[in-house]
Length: 151
Image (cartoon, helix red, strand yellow):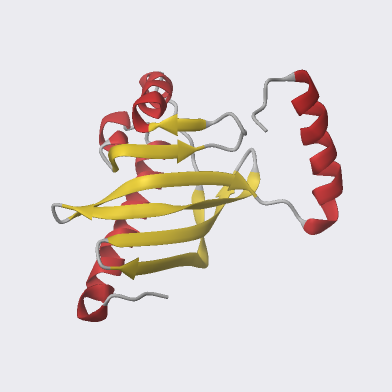
């Protein structure tokens, strides 16, 4: 799915390439090139409620991990990626497979800056089947009682 006139197919290919690069560079623990994919002022939202990081905060976390030679591997599920483009803004969502966490979802917004697509926001979340939601919510509520989780 996309919008944006004649340039949309080319722009979509470029956005898809950046998404694929993000996952490949993380798996390769290539921190330098990985963080270059983010725009100044970008936000990374992790799976924990406390994980709302500016790109500088996230860069600090990620680079420490990448320096150990370990990254993380999230593999896009074929046919489960949606990209929409309007002018210099693109938003996406995709299902991802991870060995430890199973099926996850990545979503976010990219901005075209000087001809290059950069992440303005990235959000990684767990997918919870509706049948398991009540049990998962119970775990979250119990954890929130014991931690300083924002409400």
